[in-house]
Length: 332
Ligand code: BDR
Ligand code: CA
Image (cartoon, rainbow, N blue to C red; front, side, top):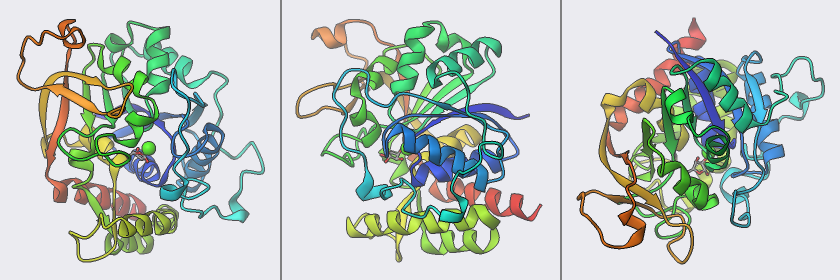
């Protein structure tokens, strides 16, 4: 059995890991990458999506370009200090630039949100949407098709931080901060949805030894992941975020959302009515009613659906699946 997947993404070094896993894993049928602003502009994230599919040998996967800014708030600066000016750790190889249209992943003639809706309508109940950038395209798709939650098999979101501190403010994770209104609108709807946030993605680190193993044993894919992660690992080391491991390492954020689809048993979730703060000093914060109280304040008075939020993970199992998949698929 394989899972048809649309990955909504803003590549991004860890997005590249998620895309590589989607391409390589035998249980995933990657239908499309839909692109969004975030780590870089949407123009650059779309170029990166095409480039990565080219390097990973998956030019049959469609790319649909999405929104270039948040649905309400003014755009925040992109994350060049984390992912490099090109979003891929400044590793673009000049000889591999996209200079001919034909051999590169097909660019859909529909914008991302319309494309998601079209695919969901044509394949009701089949597609898993994995969103690993700001949730702008997903919110737009919901506006276009309010029945979208019933048309998808499931929605997996990389975003938010519940008990873990944020990575861009003390409480906010980057994807939710980049479009908090979209994130709140998406969580306000009753989906078969799971949030994979920093509580677990900060636990799934990948070290330079692991990345070196991929470089040496996973062909062009492994070499791209090694090259693109040099800048990103340096960022993590500079922030002291890798100090628990004995060597340089970085978080696999977006790949964790794909791993949840493949091995949900490796994750532990809490469930509750969830919202995202859309203004003020806590903007971007994920909040969840884990007690099921009848809170009097209007924000909580209206009935909002339960969302599952991952709070713990067996990181060895999850990382092992990622590494084994990329190495085994290359050998085959
Ligand atoms: C998330 O933000 C982006 O920088 C990463 O690609 C990931 O999706 C982590 O907070
Ligand atoms: Ca991302």
